[in-house]
Length: 187
Image (tube, rainbow, N blue to C red; front, side, top):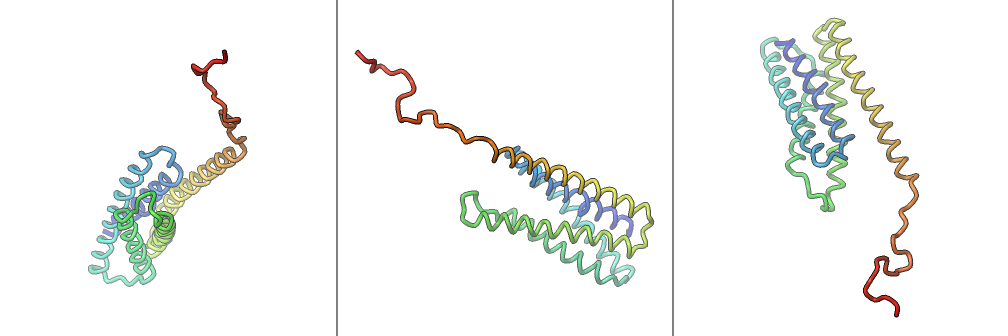
């Protein structure tokens, strides 16, 4: 049960949810596909996370192991994740005056949840006495995610830089004259 708790936590909090966040941050140009992928991936990751919590509760009731930091951070991450799911259902329309605040809330609460989840995975491995192979494997997963984010962030920055350096579009009709032939030809 302890191993299943760890595997579900690593898959849900450590792999699936970060991938869903990456989709939302770097693939918005694939409208509306990014939104559907993000939503589906995050709900799957949330389900894995919820199973992780349920297994953790069973472990606690059977073994009575007292790991307050791991348990407290786990509860905090669960609360943040529940708020993220609620945010999905309470998302205002794009033209709403609250949408900018909602975007800030959703993005930063998501980042906090992912940060504390990864911290909690490491604490859980330490508390469980996981071997070096577990730690190296999770470090490898985190390393790949970090490298992917760095590469995608650089590409996004270069794209924004390229958009800023393009010359402004010239108006098609700068003098206000007709640009297409008309029936009013000079006599």
